[in-house]
Length: 80
Image 1 (cartoon, helix red, strand yellow):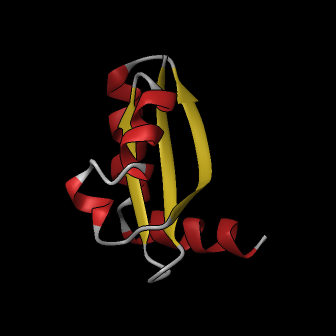
Image 2: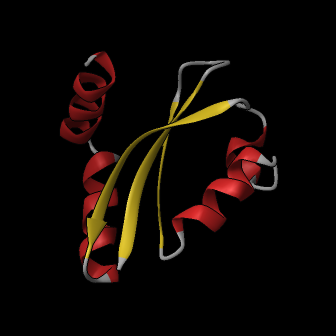
Image 3: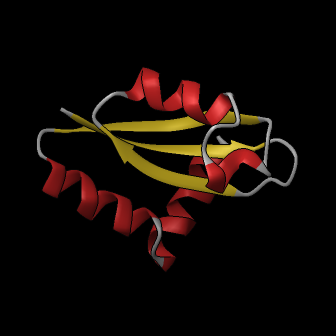
């Protein structure tokens, strides 16, 4: 199983999209400031998670979330 997740920075309001096979470990890294891309955006909150069966499927979903339509979807999810 792979997880595609979206974090929101409480500092800047920006979104970070990623994928991992171990969600708990990855979140600890983000929240602990050990991830370069989110370290400067702390604090962050987990906003959305989707489970995929394969890494290929997860990568496609992550790329979609980073696209124009995907960013619109993330904005909609954030408003609810």
